[in-house]
Image (cartoon, rainbow, N blue to C red; front, side, top):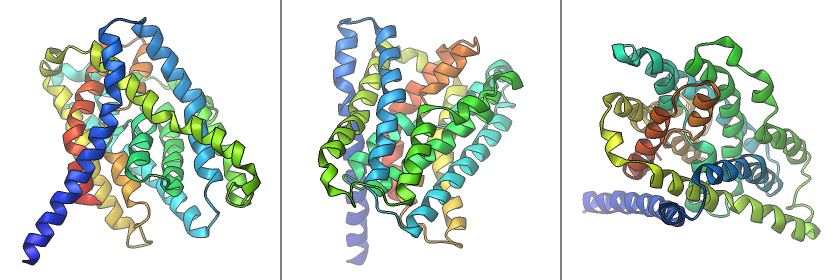
Length: 328
């Protein structure tokens, strides 16, 4: 009887996670349709939406989460844990993927691209919208995700860029520190620490609503972007290179397993209950969209990067619910 109840609970958890992944991907349908109908210039549209997400929506997500969360020491400790955890996890996966790719002799020129894909997930454009669906109105969850994005940006402009180019000149400390997400974090953190927020100052309801509206745009815009990219992808191109599957395996399978093991280690020193959903979710995300951008600015063919993003995004429909059911 107990086994039956446990099995039903597991199935219910999986169905819940799968339903939320499905709901999120449903947002990609309009972008897919209008791209197929060729109603706009695809390249310019992708660039415009990307800029809007990076420079407007993501900073507002940070402000929204910080200004709607009351300061607590435990929350601050969790933020620090998320920051360090993200740095450690992505560094480990990047190095292990890089070593694995040495087994493929023909992968030498693109080894860094595959290594980046294996480690760096779409935690800005996909993780936050997913968490917004999975944990509605839970600003602490989004706050932890915003902190993880800061760590992601620091690492992606340094280690990540070096992996792709294997040239130190492409490492940009300036861009790692002075990017929209980091600037928003630097502004919002003192407000959070001194409890200057909408929880305390309830008279600022109108300002709160404006910030929330911009923050809520991340999900629809990010998934519209995914839909447009899917419309451009030739499915047959995803089956021609086994290295795509190796890198995708690291991103969608090895990364969440490693995250779970690191969480077990972290749990020896602190409670991980409030951050486990965040850390497993960010670990299970498909390949980061900015891989295409980094390849482009480094004069590396973006076709492989695009295929990695699309293949991992498609397969994540299966792997994200499994990761959440097993490890959360």
